Image (cartoon, rainbow, N blue to C red; front, side, top):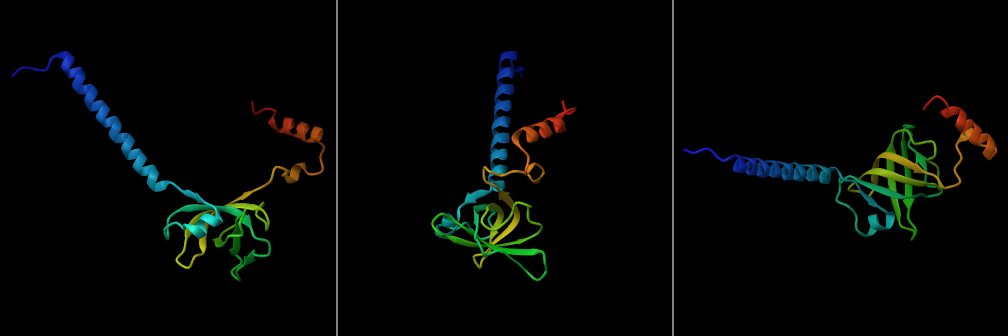
Length: 156
């Protein structure tokens, strides 16, 4: 029985490596597909809702007057509205971010429940372009720049 020539050995090794690389890529794509979190606006949630229990993100504005805390003091209920008036009720059990207020933007990560309520696991509060951190309120631009410079000294 004859052994493979070195040229053929390299070719076999190259083919095996290529097959392993493709298999690893397909496995990674499959894993990421199952972890992907799709983004929905309230109007999309109303018109074409995701499957019950599928992990998604819901983004919109917190409806004015809709924010309420359950008697347990831990669960928040509010509604997220879209540009065309679509409304999605949301329930969140946890500590809300500091920027989370009525009338502000929010991205809720969670799942749609069978009753149509969006059950959020995580809230991400959004702010507008005029946002100023509490520490910088009332400062001039020059004072704020000086404070930022002082806090970065020694980090380099």
